[in-house]
Every structure is written in structure tokens, then in C-alpha cells.
Amino acid sequence: MPTYAYRAVDMEKSCNHCRKGFESIQRMIDPPLTECPRCNNPISRVLFVPTVVIKGSPVTETDRKIKEYEKEGMWSHAAELADKEAEKTKREDLRVRALEDYKKAGYDFDKYDTEKY
Ligand SMILES: [Zn+2]
Image (cartoon, rainbow, N blue to C red; front, side, top):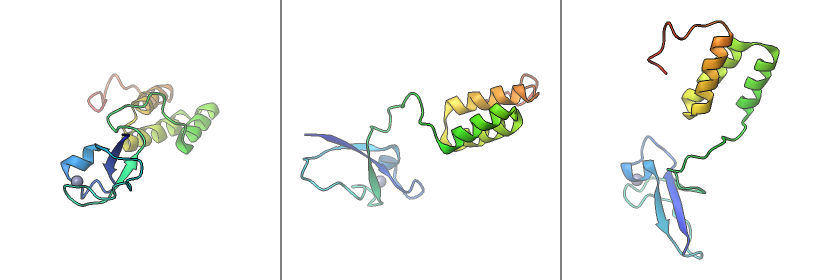
């Protein structure tokens, strides 16, 4: 029987169980779960088990924009955008990219703000 992974839709309302995501073994013919069995808040089925880190993040609209800024040599723009997106998505690759772009823009991160990273 296939194992399905579920995760909370609303992180604010979810309990510990569904916030982290959980797996449920179901038959193909069973309808997908829509509510967390513990807190009854809405959940949705995810394709991958949530704990698996997907290598090689997908190219998003923001990635494209960052690349454009980099091509134009607008390093601080690129860095800010990457920084914001990294904050939002917790993407480590963008965090590193922001740092590099900041450096190219002339910021010296060795002197300050080291704690943030
Ligand atoms: Zn729950």
C-alpha cells in the first residue's frame, strides 16, 4: 500500500503532528485525508516526505529576477532580493548567493553582521 505524506495547510493553527508533516498508509481507493486526525485542521497531501531536502531547488520567478540583476551588475539589488527570498523560503543556496552578491556590491560582511549568517 502506498504511503502518503501530509502537511498542515495553516501553520498557525496546526498542531505539532501536522506542522512537521506525517505519513499515512492508505489504499489507492481511499480518499485523501483533508483534516489532521489530531487537531482537525486542514492538511494537504504532499508529494515528498517533508523531511527530505530536495537538492537543486526549483527555478522560481525570483531566481530569474536575481539572475537578471546579476547580469546587469546590480549586485545590491540582486543581494537584497536573494536575501529576502532566502528569509522567506529558508533556502540555503539563496542565503549564500545573497552574501556573495553583497560582497560584489562592496559590502564587507567580515566586519559586521556575521551573527545573522
Ligand atoms: Zn494537527
